[in-house]
Image: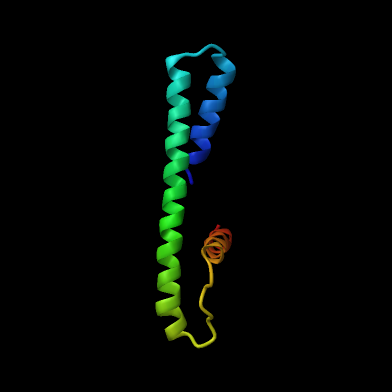
Length: 86
């Protein structure tokens, strides 16, 4: 997540500074696309693995934990943990 914000900011600044199509502008947009795609892929993989681990390990060890029913619940859990850990 730390590389997403600087990449987006750099691409938007390049769009304002260089209104014509330049090499730097194209490279900054390609960087933004690559960062966003890799972020989404990592989030999906971590959430699917997290759901598998949650349902097979945590629910077995902790009696009050309930199994996760969807991918969205795991994404929500990751966001919640990230907010608490800040």
